[in-house]
Amino acid sequence: MRIGELSRRSGVSVPTIKFYLREGLLPPGVATAANQAEYGEGHVQRLRLIRAMIDAGRLSVARTREVLSALDSGRLAPHDLLGVAHDAVTRPVRSDRDDPAFSAARAEVEALARRRGWFVEPDARAIDQAADAIRTLRALGADDLLGLRDTYADAAQAVADREVAAVVARRDPARMVEAVVAGTVLGETLLNAFRLLAQESASAKILSAPDVENRGPASFREKAKGA
Amino acid sequence: MRIGELSRRSGVSVPTIKFYLREGLLPPGVATAANQAEYGEGHVQRLRLIRAMIDAGRLSVARTREVLSALDSGRLAPHDLLGVAHDAVTRPVRSDRDDPAFSAARAEVEALARRRGWFVEPDARAIDQAADAIRTLRALGADDLLGLRDTYADAAQAVADREVAAVVARRDPARMVEAVVAGTVLGETLLNAFRLLAQESASAKILSAPDVENRGPASFREKAKGA
Image (spheres, each protein chain N blue to C red):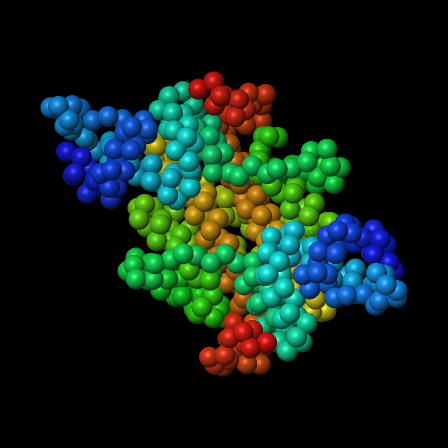
């Protein structure tokens, strides 16, 4: 197919396709004449993967290129390849490793992972992310909220087991990478948005039980404006 | 106590305390002489609340002032006051309401909330957040990942019920606001960091089962560098 058809099929504009070609994210088509090339089904699929990384996963072009070259090298075992994709969408934490409160929190996260039989490498960024949150809660004297650690870990584990099963069920390495990138980021958004809704609901039910069913149009957002 | 003692007690520097006083976040102490004031226990507590909002909740000074004035007005019922705090830490979504795919995803989220008996107001930002994630997954053709909706909702609900119970158990309105702000943000970090760790672990167990226990020092992060 020509580039115009590739654009229609993939939903990616022609200038953007040309940008991806120039940046080496999309392999060139087969040249058929000066300034004309033929593209195949593989290009449609590659464009979907690039979109998943750049739009859904919010990866930079450089990061996207790194993940694609790990995929294209064909040298990584599936778990290692997915680890590269997973890392690409995981935010690093600026953490002060010399801070004893941070080290203590980090040790606590490692102990929790061990207790649960989680197989995680010691340089996983998520250990730092969790440690940073625990240190901050402790600094605020929020022991009651810290007590929810295992509630979070239980929920996280239930979700992660099904997510990874869905990724692995795709079998094709490129489709698995796509699921890791899109699923890690969008799954986080979905999980947290549902959590916010469930919090609002639980608060309404506990704190304003008598009139929960019949609050009428004066929402707290409107009331707050008049406060 | 004098401002130096207030700084030691709260862990907030004297210049920062003066900044909060100027910005009206912290009420003035009782003037005892020209350029000297006496502060009380209430100031220590208020400083902890301000820190929770600005450091943990990453709120702007303006947003912090809004939440504090809702608290200080004393005019809002607890659920409405917590709603103001909750909204302050919830990111708005730039969503295109005219996009039929977004509207369809939004209707889907509302149906899910109804089915679960969640009491949420129709202008809750988290409805838009969830709808945006669902629309993007659908555009990527990721029906397999969309199928995890109820898994996310189950996990979210289990977590939210305990979080709200912990908030309500604090009883004091200022301490409840503190828990909403810090807990919403840091709880999200903790939940997601644990999810990333559990994903890494599930992937290791499913995809590299034979040598999970004995992988040695060559982690996928090191292998990827050589790929």
